[in-house]
Amino acid sequence: MTASLPVGVGPDEVWPAPVPSGPLDATVEVPGSKSLTNRFLVLAALSNGPVHIRGGLRSRDSSLMIAALRALGVWVDDAEAEWVVTPGPLAGGTHIDCGLAGTVMRFVPPMVLLAGARGDRRPVTFDGDEGARVRPMGPLLEALRALGATVDDDGRGTLPFTVTPPATTPAEVEVDSSASSQFVTALLLVAPRLTHGLTIRHTGETLPSLPHIDMTCETLRSAGIRVDQPDERTWIVHPGEIQLREVRVEPDLSNAGPFMAAALVAGGTVRIPGWPAHTTQPGAYYPELLTRMGATCALDGDVMTVTGDGTVHGIEADLSPAGEITPTIAALCALADGGSQLTGIGHLRGHETDRLAAIATEVERAGGRCQAGDDSLSFGGLPPAGLTPAVMETYHDHRMATFAAILGLVTPGLHVRHVGTVAKTMPDFPTMWAGMLGQEG
Ligand SMILES: O=C(O)C1=C[C@@H](OP(=O)(O)O)[C@@H](O)[C@H](O)C1
Ligand SMILES: C=C(OP(=O)(O)O)C(=O)O
Image 1 (tube, rainbow, N blue to C red):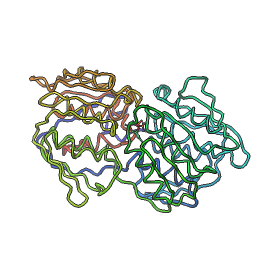
Image 2: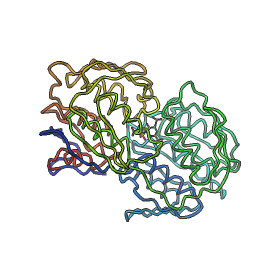
Image 3: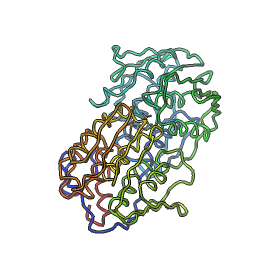
Image 4: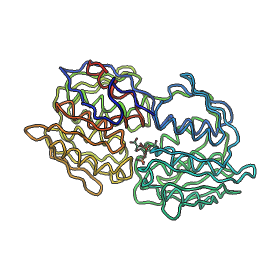
């Protein structure tokens, strides 16, 4: 998919990050949440009747999910603004392209457990981008084996692999989800459709992105499914029919982050309409974190207003519940008036790229100060002379592109290579960013 780019800028070219001409005064409509869109698509495919999805995200990750569901036999009509998903019996004997989408490579393989229900035991093959072939999959593949599926990954624990449906599945499974919360979510999503439901036990030491697991449980409950959590590492999903009918996707609060951060860096005000009163998205952490970094954040009705004066304070924060927002907070730390320490983020080495290495390398490339630890990032704050212009690398990572754009706000001459990588979750980013600055997109 090609990102919507300013005229004359191809997705593989370097993009001159725009510099504001004065304080910001912008309202930015952020597209739908990737995490909610792809959960609703999967649950709609497993539900007991047609489901209407409003506000679904149009991006590479959601297009890949829609293509995956169609390949398994689900009818998805996304021609209009309101999508209609009509479930049918799932069938194997197909290939799934996961791209670089964690939600596709983790959420779809367990669906194959259901594809053998009518005695059709044809395998499903999975592959993705080169960068996807190093993302952690092993513990989820082990869990699928324990649930009776035949999984052939040549012992790698990564893409590519083949999953063949089992005849029956047991009622309990263990999984080490310390490398990604998406392993638990993936099992939770199919659990109500298994004959006995499923009890899932996390066996690892740590568990990142807990709000994303809460998001899954909340979505299941809203579809009439009973999910019990007797302790913090066990989920009991009772068998039942998934009833969704009509859902609306919240704006993607993680993708709102770079625009909110811009108000701090450039000074002025940025408003995000559609901010949910209650949410399980990790972007809900932004108001508190940005306030600690010097912003004023206020929710008036459903509009989140962020105001800054160009001063950014350093911060110490454990981002394990919200690893996804790390690149945006990291950009602010690189521009802060003091040091910062971000912890609980070792699993980001298995995201779209090794984000700890990428962030440290790119901050240093622009003349800033950042060091990556096993589980942390340490920042020395903005050097007295500011950052220096550079061509920033993006590593096929949408959040490294938006990270670089934030640094570019105060670094004339900074460029971003392959800005089109934002197509993963926010294809219109370059136009939206220029619009926020009152410039032509
Ligand atoms: O379930 C989800 O939708 C997600 C869970 C998180 O994954 P990790 O737990 O692997 O960080 C998050 O970072 C990712 O962007 C989306
Ligand atoms: C980690 C991310 O994505 P994915 O769903 O591919 O894991 C992300 O969007 O920051």
